[in-house]
Image (cartoon, rainbow, N blue to C red):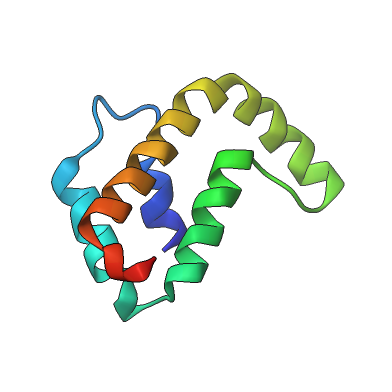
Length: 88
């Protein structure tokens, strides 16, 4: 799921793929709980945390991409709420 969310919120993508995001939010139940998906979305929104040496490089890269990642995370969350209201 983390890699799928990374793809769904990737700022390098030309546009958010509606079908991909919809499939993700409708089928995530097969491999995770809604709370786990929400936690992963929150982590993606806030940026990297963890061990100092590795995290500093990721934080620097994330600061540059943050303005593009956060709106995409919000779009995924919006689609999830619309398509799977039973998760909430």
